[in-house]
Image (tube, rainbow, N blue to C red; front, side):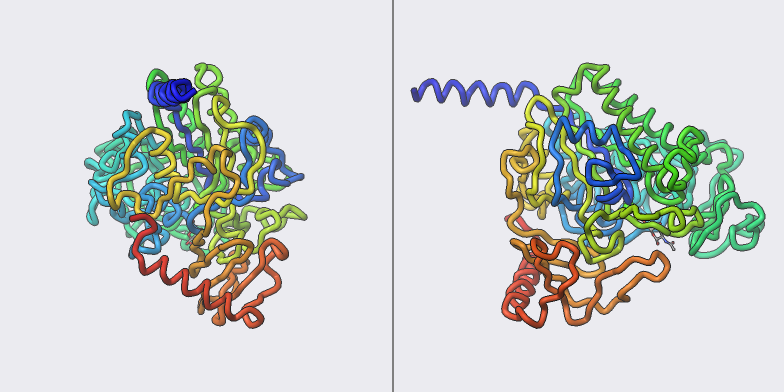
Amino acid sequence: MLTRILALLLFASYVHAATPPNIVLIYADDLGYGDVSCYGATRIKTPHIDRLAEQGLRFTDAHSTSATCTPSRYSLLTGEYAWRRKGTGILRGNAPLIIEPGRATLPSVLQRAGYKTGVVGKWHLGLGDPNLDWNGQIKPGPLEIGFDYCFLIPATGDRVPCVYVENHRVVGLDPADPITVEYDQPIPGEPTGKENPELLKLHPSHGHNQAIVNGISRIGYMRGGKSARWVDEDMADVITDKAIAFIENNRSRPFFLYFATHDIHVPRVPHPRFAGKSGMGPRGDVILQFDACVGRIAETLDRLGLADNTLLIVTSDNGPVVDDGYQDDAVERLGDHRPAGPWRGGKYSNFEGGTRVPFVVRWPARVKPGMSDALVCQVDLGASLAALAGAKLGRGELPDSLDQLAALLGEDRAGREYLIEQGYVLSLRQGPFKYISPGNGPQRNQKTNTELGNDPAGQLYHLADDPGEQRNRVTEDEARVRDMARRLEQLRSAGRSRP
Ligand code: NG6
Ligand code: CA
């Protein structure tokens, strides 16, 4: 008997070592829990994501680390909570790289385990040094922190520079027309959305009135680089083609692809084949476009015979927002669609809608189809995927990332014992309870019309009885509030989650 068990164990570890799965992480931008039909959307259909959910595991309590982009991505890639570090809020498009080369990252750990690693799409973690010249070598960047290949939207679709960066260079740049990027003051002679609204095909609703690229005004100023400027309508196709090329080029080895789409962030400018197709205006159309990109990636894995042994994750960097700065009809055409599903708040918020996001895992060779209510967080992807790849983490590496592989694969139905959510302030989830720290910020983001969930007295909700966070128990359960506040403070001051 014992020898049989030993033989089985040996065989299992052999199989594990011999065939580590490919890993594809599709990271949507601002896609809400309720924006996907397998999560309850009815007016929008997302058949490609739904099919992955049918073949895999659909999580109902999965979280981005933060309610905005830069901190979520920082935590995802470094395995460290962004709130431990200054300068990890929403970055300008000319910010320097905020992840120090040399530190362990999710991709560098996988690289160590023999993976080819690539990032395609939205970066928003800064590039280069503080005075980066966009016309020269753009480094340090992804290639200096563990990726073998990159094709990037440097910051966001609504921030300059509006050009793609492949490895260390701007793509398609004409040296005779160099790029200047400026965030502090306008560049003389360059039209802006503020001064030249007649040049716009899409008008801002708030902010976004600076450089004009492709008839859309953005955040920040830029001059030059005309031949390199992106066309928003083609962006989803351009980056999906690059993601597919990376898969094709690395089909014969284990690879990790981090595919971070621009959709469904603003400006929402679908390709003509999706324009008008959702009946909900551009916001709905780009959800369809995102779903189609997911479909193209899945189809590529099928075509190459890789689907069975590829761990495919589809999720989002933060909760949804309806008006995020452009007059794109999103508010007018929303109707009864609830982008955050049953959760309160959305992007920027302390409420559940800030970080509770769609999260689908498909790996036919290993993961049984179904649904999981396990509490999972993207900060744990680093340690969990390292465990999957057989990579050992050194002391202090990915310091807040816990090995939650069993939960991700559906073998453990509980997941994390606690969870920290970063909105305006920090919140602690524990058992059925959620404690939101006292917050002195505004209660509502007037521009986006988001409930931010700030209350100077702090808040306590029982999510199992009150998923919509309507009944604040802060005065009736003072002992629990004290305990949870103390625990949150301990987790914060410990400086890390793992020894
Ligand atoms: C905000 C922008 C918003 C969006 C966000 C970042 C304004 C008024 N609003 O400051 O449009 O770009 O930053 O979104 O400028 S995120 O998903 O990258 O975090
Ligand atoms: Ca985002």
